[in-house]
Amino acid sequence: MRKTISRNLPGQLISMIGNEIIAGEILPGEIITSDALEARFGVSRTVVREAMKVLNDKGLIRARTKIGTVVLERSEWNLLDVDVISWLQQSGLASDLLVDLDEVRASYEPSAARLAALRRRPEDIATLKKAFEAMSEAFKTEGQASIKFVEADLIFHKTILASTQNELMKRLGELFLPLLGVRIELVHPERDGAFILDHQAVLVAITNSEPEAAEAAMKHLIEDAREGSSKYEKEKIQNPQGVVRKDK
Image (cartoon, rainbow, N blue to C red; front, side, top):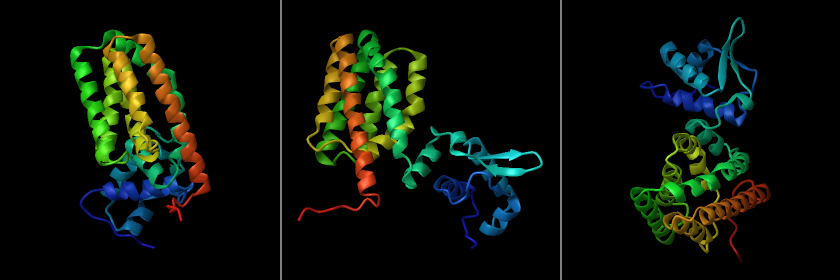
């Protein structure tokens, strides 16, 4: 069935094809042709060509000599690409990445907190405190799923990595920020706000230049996060449609 999209930019075409590949509607190994896409979506070859280039850069497709443009396996996808993460989330397939993310975070964030406690600058502390206050306020007034809460939490973790004064550590944070944002949106903390206390403990240790305490506090924070991911995964299996059940 032919679908029509806006003629102004290939963005919608990229999103449509990307979503279909991620969701398994277009399977790995299938051949995608420009002629077929032009006919299906009613767009020009130029638009198709630009969309295919973007999808190629995201690791979803690859042009192969004498074969054509082939849809790739998940193992080839750029799982840290913002759009790919978004499509995974829309398809309900992002949860398995959250477990992987928590394992990766456990390997570097405690060390980052330790370094931050040793190297942080006054401006770093100011930014950390501002982010923590914004996160706490957003939780009280709008809830843990609010955009303000997510943004403040991301700034908090990004600032810790920047406080290490280590360029590679900073880049590492930027690499995982999109996925961390998805994690915060999907895995809601417990309503009692224990996660706020976890962040506060990290903030206090870094502010007081206590590397051991900062490292321990971050380990505890991530462990709580991992438990949240496990709980989310169990709930997803038990309630795959995301139906809200009200107590009688």
